Each structure stands twice: as structure tokens, then as C-alpha cells.
Image 1: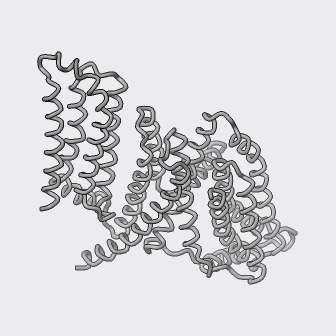
Image 2: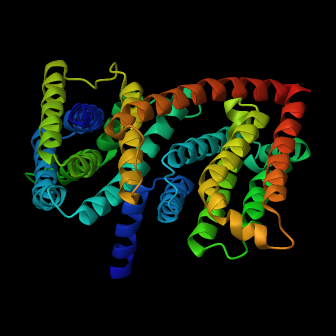
Image 3: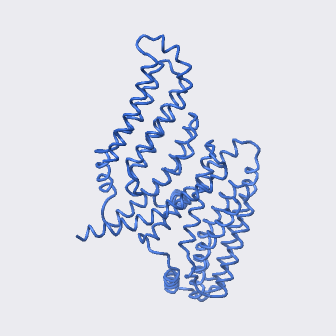
Length: 256
Length: 205
């Protein structure tokens, strides 16, 4: 069950981030140079893969440690990081659902990046368009960093970094092939819903493992994760409904 | 120039992990540290972090709502806390604080771990109750319901923990001229029942 949530959360997180990276690649590629854009994207992916390969052996070994103190410390630190990170995603998705933040629109982002890329001067003499390369590299790297963070921390507490890597790879291929087929930003996928789901899962597992790291014993052991998931889901949905009603109530009071 | 790169590097990771609202990260760290301390005092407070998280994210989202409506979170909070202080806050707090002190009085030589335990439980329920009360208007939970449950749980837990010790100290207490076992147990029951009935009466009004 834990591995299922690990796989799902990494897959969804990777899909969301790769959609955003794809938007940048499409915008830069269509307005500048495809070869330089792809080169930047490939270099960014290579950087991320190297980062994972560097940390993977250490985390796998730590998770398999027989020493309970080391395991507890790993749970405490990684669990707290997952929790803080997940709360950011959850908070933003709640704010988007309540209308306090605008919904992420890939088409708008695509136009903005394309216009910015078009304005910047390009030297005709150079083989590589450095602007396109750097923009693609930075975009893919920053979006991919969040996925790597989830893969490494979540994988560390579950003792299975490889599953996270496989889920990320599948999501990457899925988005890449979809983008190749459609050749436009994937604006119609429910991005905020996916971020909400990832946020809930990360906060649930972060809470469970951070508290396990302090030495707390949950009443039903690992089965308590289900209860936590339901609690956070209900809390978030309730918060969305309440914020929406408070917002309309306070707006009415202010206008009177 | 090097310092600029170093500070940019740390700023990047700070934004990446902590994000714009540092209070959420600070609350998580505080919550985990609190639970760590409570576990050290033999209080298995597994329920505490989800409540702290619910309060923290409610507080953070509420702050965005307040700024969005050109109001301040402080003015919204002042309005709610003034209502709470008039009605409900002081009584359950008094119950939560008085009960362990009464239990402590049963034997002036109570051991250090027991005092730490009693103080930890007091602090535990005080924090949980405060958080629940502050966010109760947002979650539409009646503050009195929260206070009632919290005070009841506090007293129940303390009595449950103190009960074996009470039996053990029964003969010693009988020997003290200014304390009588029956009187102290009666006082404890009267305090608890009075507080609960008062809260019940207010909630029914």
C-alpha cells in the first residue's frame, strides 16, 4: 500500500512538473532554435539523473540499516522535509481552488515565454543559441528538482528509491510522448487537482514518518496512514468550502 | 562576489524547501520538537501533529484571505479572541492547570518524572486547546465543544495516570495532618464535575 502511494505521488508530481517544463521547451523551441532547446533539456535531465545516482546508494543503505536510531533519524529528517514540502503544494492548490490564487494556465505561460524569447536578440553566427539552451536547461532543471526531492525523500523513508525513479521515468515518457504528438502545451490536464492529490499524500506520509522518527507509536501502526489521509482530505475540502463562503460573506460586508 | 553566490545558493534552497510562508515550516519544526519532548516525558502524543498541521495551514490560508480582502489577520483574530475570552477560554484553562496541581498536592515529594509528566500533559492540552480554539471559527466547530472535550481528556488522562500512584500513596497521605486522602479525592471530583457542569450549562444556553 505504501509503495502504491509512493509510485502514485511521484508519477503525479513528475507529470505536473514535466507539463510545466514541456511548456517552456515548446515556447523556446518554436520561437528560437529546436536543437539548442533540446540540448538544454537533455543536459538538465542528465544533471538530475546524476544527482539521483549520487544520493541513491547512501539513502538505500541508510534505509536498510538495522540500527533503529539511524532509521528513526532518517524518518524524522526526511519525514519533516516531505511534510514541509507537501504543505507548500497543498496550500497553493487550496488557494487555487478557492480563487485566492489564479489557476495555472499553461497557454498563458507559453505565450509569455514565447514573447520573451522572441524579443531577445540571437546571434546568427553562433551554432548554439545560448539563450534557448540556458532557458530550457533552467526550466527543466528547476521543475525536475521538485520531482527529485520527492523521489529521494519519499524513497528514503520507504526504503525504495528505485520505485520512485521508475515512476518518474514513466511520467517523463508519458508527458514527452504526449507533447510530441500534440505539439502544444498540455493545458487541459487537471493540473491543480493533481497537485492537490500529491500535496495530500506528501503531508500524510510526512506526518506519519516525522512522528515515527520522534518515537511516537501510532495506535494502528501503518494502517493509521489511511486515517491520516482521510483526515487531511476532509480538512482540505472543508477548508476550501469554508474559505469560499467566508470570502463571499466578507466581500458582501465590505461592499455594504 | 563569492558571498553573493553563497547567499543566492542558500536563498534558492530556502525558497525551494520552505517557500514564501516561513510560518508553516516553523510550525512543523516546533510541532515535531514538542512531540519529541512529550515522548521523552512518556506522553504518546500521536494525535498532536495532525491538529497542529490543520491549525497551521488554516492560519496560513486565512492570512491570504485577509490580505486579499485588504483586512489584516490580526484584526480578524482580535475580534475572535475577544469573543472567546469573554465566554470560554479561561474556564477550561483553569481546569487543565488546577487539576495537575491538585494531584501534585497529594504528595509533596512527588517524583521528578511524574512532575514532568504532569506539566507536559498540561502544556500538551493547553497548546492543543489553544490551536483548536483559534481555528474553531474557521472550521465552524463550537469553541465550547473543543474546550469541553479537551478539559475532559486532560482530567481523564491525569486521573488514569495518577490513580496507581494515589493507591500507593494512600497510607502516606493518611499520616499527614493537613491532608486527608478522602478530602483530596473529593476535592478532585468536585473540581472536575463543577468545571464540566459549568461548561455544559454554558453550552446549553
